[in-house]
Image (cartoon, rainbow, N blue to C red; front, side, top):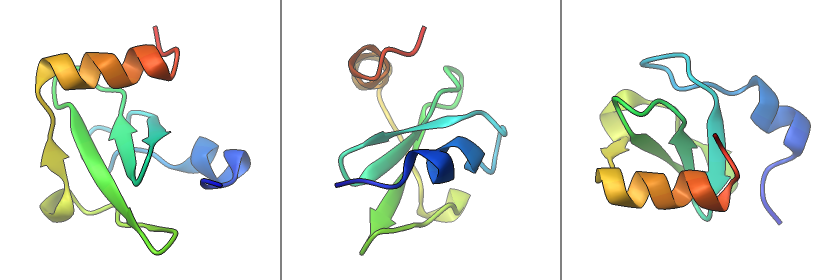
Length: 70
């Protein structure tokens, strides 16, 4: 089901303010330098840097391709 599109549009990475894209149970920052992803637990985004994970560059690029982020 995922998060509502209008809600996703207002969310941003708390570290860089970059837009995020939904990928399964994660919100992934579109910032190529940090490559952070934030968990979505029980439908609630946990937008805390302390709760985020840094993705490998390869995995981050795959997510960006899947979500058609230039």
